[in-house]
Amino acid sequence: MKSRILLTSILLLVTFFIGPSLACTAADGKPIVTLPASILKGWSHPFESSDIGNPLTPGSTRAIDGGVEIIAGGKDIWGMADEFHFVYQKQSGDFDVATRLESLTAPHLYARAGLMAREDLSSDSRHIFFLAFPDNRPRHNNSSAYEFQYREKKGAESHAIYPPQNPGSPMFPVDFPNVWVRLKRVRNQFTGFVSNDGKTWKEYGSYSMDLTATIYLGLAATSHIADARTTARFKDLRVLH
Image (cartoon, rainbow, N blue to C red; front, side):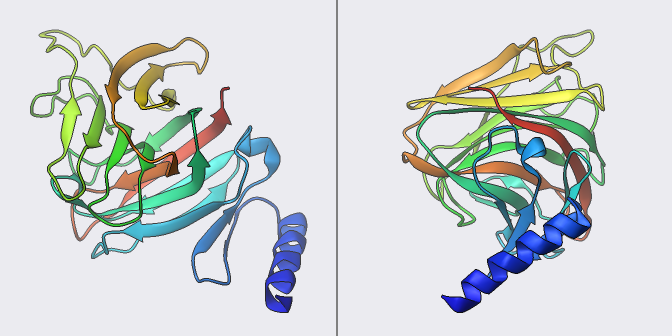
C-alpha cells in the first residue's frame, strides 16, 4: 500500500515538473502513459500500454505534444491471432470516441493504426478495430484507405467491412495529417466514422457484436511485418458524448 502511494506521488510530481512527454511504469510492470487532462478530452483514466501477441519487434508508447506516439511491430491484426502495440483503458457500457491520426509510416502496404475495442488482452481476443492505412493504394478487396475489422469468436478468423469498389478515386481516402477516426458503441452496435476536420462525420460501416459490457478501449497499431516498426502519431483524443 505504501509503495503504491509513493509511486502515485512520484508520477504526479514528475508529470508536473517535466510535462506531457513522459511514459512511466506502474507497480504491476505495465507502462502507463501520462497525459494532461487537456489532451484526454473526457477520457477518464490513464492509458496503459503493452504489446499484444508477443511481436518479434517490441513496441513502445510516449506522450507527445497534444497526443500519443505509438511505435509498433507485429505481423498483423488479422487472421486468428494478432500482434500489435495497444494503448488502452477499461471502458464499461456505451461510448463514442474519436482521434486524429496525424501520421502513419509505411514499412508495409498493410501497416495500420486506429481505434480498437477489445474483449481481453490475449492475442486471439474478440474485438472491433476501425483503422486507417498509411496511403491510398488499393489493398485486396478494399479500394479505400480505411477499414472496419472484427473477430466475432475468440480464436476464429477475422473479417472486414469494405466500401463499394470505386474505379476512380477511393470513396474513403486518407489525407494526413487530417485523418480522423471515430468509433461508437450503442449496446451491441459498433459504428465507425471518418472525417477530415473532426466536426463533420461520414459513416463508414457498422456491425453488431455482443462484446462484454466492460472492454479494453484505445489506440492500436501494427507494422504488418515481423522485423520492422511503424510509427503512428495520434492527436486530439476525445470523448464525443
